[in-house]
Length: 246
Image: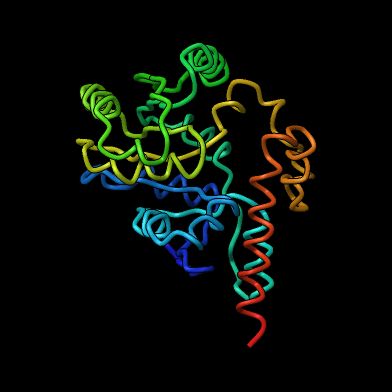
């Protein structure tokens, strides 16, 4: 690792949870780095936004989060692309001796999540957590509140800062602020914080294996997620048509 492959203009690593976790465990701490786990929605956004594509392609690792990416890679004849779940990556590394910081969600949710993590992973080394400010994509850049949070993180010297806010906002955050860290890796994991708090919120594994997590999630939260998935479906069709029709 890394074993990169390019898909719709974004470079992914072909890996597995175990290989990826081992790679992170042995990564040099200096300079600071960031990792993205984009789903198909973020890839669709990056297809139409060169600046977001740059964010994904400048990362230490970009790992595919979602079966549709794997299926489309197979359709295009690209082998070895496997889904990397942010949830399973977090739980794998919580069992290591790395120092963890959690950045995302509201303060009450974070407190409950940390309490559950300490119960489920008693040996996990959690050095801190914080709820970030609620900002638009544009407000992420050069934000003084985030900069102050980074200063506090540096005092604690975490090996991993798990960033759990909406996508692609979290990708912009880790891209713009990882360089201010003294050490460590910022990893954008989206809704994983909700699953760490309550694993029952995760879609069943069999649904994920057949690539229908998106349909399950729409059924659970139609008003919030339908616009996002409709945008993704339309963009996927455009991407495929442009590449399959001369």
